[in-house]
Image 1 (tube, rainbow, N blue to C red):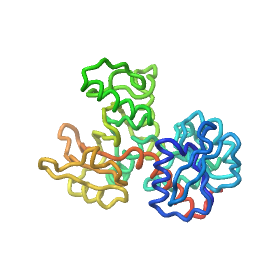
Image 2 (cartoon, helix red, strand yellow; image 1 turned 45 degrees about the vertical axis):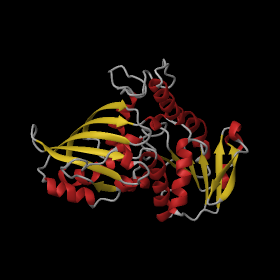
Image 3 (tube, helix red, strand yellow; image 1 turned 180 degrees about the horizontal axis):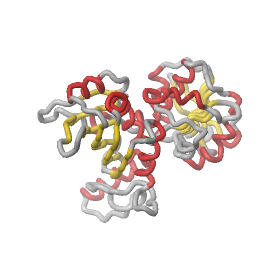
Image 4 (cartoon, one colour; image 1 turned 90 degrees about the vertical axis):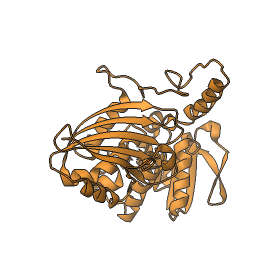
Length: 335
């Protein structure tokens, strides 16, 4: 099994390496790929230094699976070309809504891999990935009619530069110095910004529309969803306040039992001080944590949840590797 990681020097690329090492997949040859400015750099994997290769000249016929973790512009330019020789698992948004490209969260809709037409599989937005994992088992039982979700997203969702800027801004605030934001529309340190990605004409941001469209594609296009996405001064992990309306009645006991038994979910829901999960506890964990489970008594069959997950893991690297595992397990069916 030969594998390539495009964008190996970035946040998601390095996290993908960590997941591959932890998963102990049988990899014969690993190719780390980035732009020309990173060529020749060395990155350690399983105790061995691997040299970074140039994306422009790399021959994808050498590999069976290529993880793309370098953004939409790179995927637009290189993913289709690479897919002629190997499977591409793309972390960017470029192919997510392409009707010929399956958008996959393996625990939720691995059966959609039967519809591979371009040898490209899309990885969803990090906020969508953790949401649908928590909602899938509930939808199967009670049928979700409507979702209202507010996200509280860490700066790592924007990459390494925003993470560095959060640290820089925090120091400047504590020193009483003036701040000029580089990667944010307003000061992020000690603040909350209700704006992620660009605005559309209807007032929603692209991040909010991603959640709506991707959830429908992955879970069920009959579900109505409205989202508000907020950036918080947190390094890693996204949180979501979720309000659901089901078609069928439910019990809280059945909801907890169902979520706890679903792969990738973990319920932490004690009605005491600290009896819930926060971004800090989710960091570095594979699971999606569900807390604050309670009935919404203002609507029929209404439920409130608090969902927390490590966005770099669950929403990107881990989900990508689990897609690869699913392809391998099923002998690359669909090709």
